[in-house]
Amino acid sequence: MSKVSYYTEEGLKKLRAELNQLKDVERPKASQAIAEARDKGDLSENAEYDAAKEAQGMLEMQIAKLENTLSNARIINESELDTSKVLVLSTVEVKNKANGAKMKYTLVAQSEADLKTGKISVDSPIGKGLLGKKVGESAVISVPNGKIELEILSIARN
Image 1 (spheres, one colour):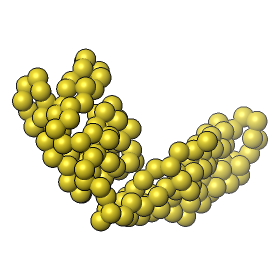
Image 2 (cartoon, rainbow, N blue to C red):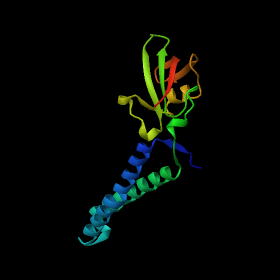
Image 3 (cartoon, rainbow, N blue to C red):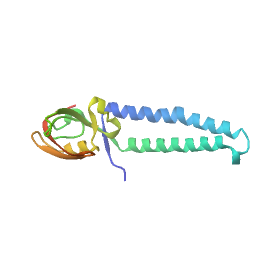
Image 4 (tube, helix red, strand yellow):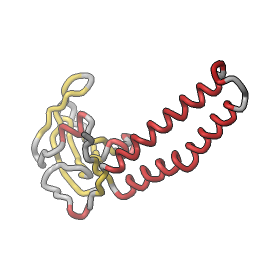
């Protein structure tokens, strides 16, 4: 069973654009590559044909995955978000209790995550650890190099 994913309107537009690119541009290219390879003779010994068919299979798998993601995607109305606890699209300021470092993260769907811009996936260890927490609470999160304790300093809408 597929799980529902929450997106901003911008994130959903990007997904749709990617799907359209795959269907309208990449799919015809793959079909053309197969046709060209088929025209080169005996298919039983045609590595180019096999490679083109395999590439088409991978492309179709990617298209199916994106279609599935889009069918389970929901847009979040950011103006209705509750800022009393950490939710998807919350911007959270946290303090690492071990070293006092402050960080700001916005929790987003996995496909919108971009650490350079402070967007982390709600499915990441830190994202999962922060979900549902309120200002003043701490989250102990298992990360690859051990455990970190983050205190929630503030929660805002994106």
